[in-house]
Length: 340
Image (tube, helix red, strand yellow):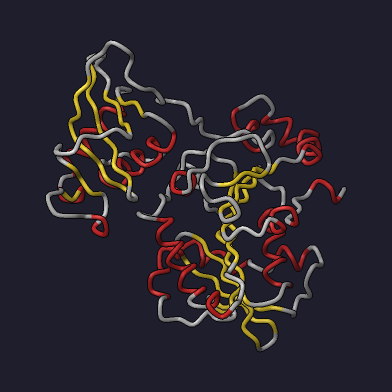
C-alpha cells in the first residue's frame, strides 16, 4: 500500500504550537503516528484518554500495532499497569484525564509530550468531563511547572480526534471556528493553539475501493468515515430572534467563564445568546466559578431541565456554535439530556 495515504505529522509539529488539535477521518494513521513519535522520540510522554476504563483497554494493546508493522521490536518496550518502559527505563505514562487533578504532586520533569487520544466524542456512552479543558490545562501546568523559567521548552500537547463536529468544549474554549483550511489558529492564540483539519484524497480513494467503502458510499456514515465531513452538523438550531419580535431575558447561565442569556421570544422560541442582563437570576455551572448572589445549577436542576425540554421539542435556538456547545453541555450535565 502506498505510503502517501497515511497521516504525516511533520506539518503539525513544525508549527510548534503548545496545543495542537489533529482532527481528521477515521483510520488515516493519526494515533499510530503520534504513538511512534512518543515511543521513539526524545524524552518521556503522557498518553491520556478521558476515563480510567479507556486507559485499561489501552494498556492491553498499546504496543501491538507498532510491533505488527515492524516499527518497534517485540521486546523493545513493555507496559506494566499505567507505565511504559523501554528496557528498565520509564518511557511514558498512560493516564485518564478524569484523574489528572490527582497528579499535581507528581514530578514529570522528563515529560516532553502529552497526547490526548480520542479528544472529540461520538454520541454514545461517554460524555465530556465537566470543565474538561480546564482539567487538561491543569495537567499541562503540572508537567510544565517552572521549566520555562529555566529556559526549557514547554511540553507539547497533541489532541487527536476524528472529525465528529466543531461544536465541542475544546473548540468553544479556544474560539476555534469551522474551516476547510488544513491549518488554522484559535482566535487570539496564533502560535499557541493550532487546529489541523486533516484531509487526504489518496487515502479516501483507497477507502472508496474497499467493500466497506462501497457499503457506506452515499450514506451519512460514509461522508464521515471516508469523505472527512463532520458527522454531526453544526448549523442545526443556530439562529437569532427575528427582527420585529419582542424578547425577554429569563435567566443568565455562566459556564467556563462565559455568561449567556436565555431569552424568550414572541415567536414562541427560546434563544440562548451571548447578550445577557445583569440583575436577572444567574446560574453557575461549576463550584469553581460560583459567586455571591448567584445560584449553583447543581441545586437548581429544574431550570436546566426546563431549558432542555425546550430543546427536546425543537423550541430552543443558539446564537452561534460556541453558545450551542456550552449550553448543550449544561443540558447534558444538569438537564437530564441524553446522548444517543
